[in-house]
Image 1 (cartoon, rainbow, N blue to C red):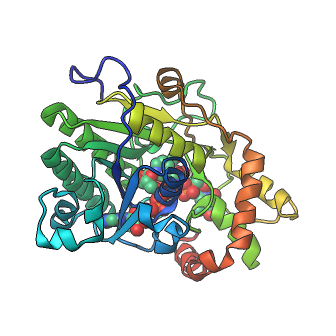
Image 2: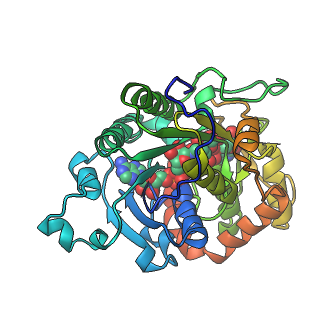
Length: 364
Ligand code: NAD
Ligand code: DAU
């Protein structure tokens, strides 16, 4: 979103005192809250999360309670969002737990409906949360002149052919394929418009596929690991030739913080870790790590309109902001992720059967 209003060079580091993390009870948002708690104990975190099927309050367990305020609510609820940002002392806010904290000075916006297969079944919650919800937050950020970082996806760029020598860059044209990625593309455009029209101090990051702890069992890697743990055969869409560019969620979290603190206002940064693997290769790695035969899986229906390949060129964030991924050993990261699901069966088991039933009805 380069424009005249962009800063000419990376801003000097401004560490926020109090961040509003939307969707902080979901996979990446919770990992980010833990990352901030570990690395920046001086920053207070307010999580606003609707606790949909994808969010769990317990994902934030372990964060020192003095550093965290949890608010159960919807980003589309403009009055609620306003009440969190309002700095005017009132009897109600004086009584609220957030009142002891400095005012919120930045919004880090993760909250979304995030799963492509769900968006194919019913796009309406995607339009509501991803588009209208982002609009509500942008308006609130504009009123209060807050720093705004929008978490987006590489899927807004569509897909690449398997043999394309190019990767996505910040200059790639928008070409989303699914209702999910179209709704994320819409939200990116809103953020750019609010920056250009109103001067909102916004940045955007578009990241590739994350893996790690707290990821819902509907997603590819956790689904296969938990299938094996639950005695269900893993399920591969089509021939499994589609390629995803995997990044450890810890690296995504450090990239977000880097952009939040030092990113140029008005800019977009692509985030990736050179982790391209075909789905069948990833599944075979999981099977091998879990002591199974490499052919111990079922082929199931492919995703209608499924994207073939994503690949990120992260040169801009690396050269401009000095960010580099640290957890680039995918095999070791997969091992740690398998261990996490093995030792957290109470966390994923309650969602497993309903998720598999939904997939069964979709032929997946
Ligand atoms: P997730 O589905 O695990 O979590 C989403 C969270 O948002 C949940 O806690 C849910 O309760 C909350 N939420 C949903 N609707 C809400 C609403 N209306 N109000 C408040 N909270 C609401 O998603 P994720 O995988 O952690 O993705 C987080 C963000 O990162 C999304 O914006 C997604 O587009 C983006 N992203 C994800 C990936 C990935 O690989 N998972 C990659 C790039 C970008
Ligand atoms: O690229 C970033 C995106 O990555 C994020 O924006 C999305 O929020 C996130 O869900 C993810 O989207 P994908 O559609 O790439 O991820 P998913 O885990 O759903 O699927 C990854 C690939 O694996 C895809 O080609 C479909 C395939 N797949 C998926 C499932 C659930 C299977 O082969 N079997 C499965 O059981």
